[in-house]
Amino acid sequence: MRKDNWKLVWKAALPSRLELFDIAADPSETKDLSAENGDKLRELQDWITRLAGEMVQPLLLMDAARLTFYAPPVVADPATLFSLGD
Image 1 (cartoon, rainbow, N blue to C red):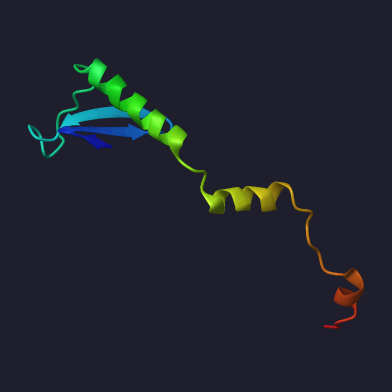
Image 2 (image 1 turned 90 degrees about the vertical axis):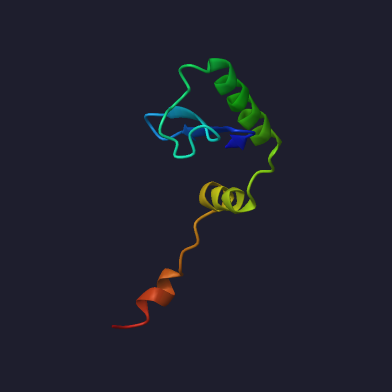
């Protein structure tokens, strides 16, 4: 996520990790500044959290969850299956 000259990389996969870069001074992102800039780090994390709260839930994921957990399973009629032959 970028804001002004700052770039926050928030890796949520375990183990989670935060990296903060000043891309104007370090365009190759070689020096992680998260330890030295805790206030900026929290500011950008809070901004991401607020934006995520405002987002609309993705329809595809909601449909997948609904179909997976709330719809009864659909199975073929056994009489039809066993009358098909080899």
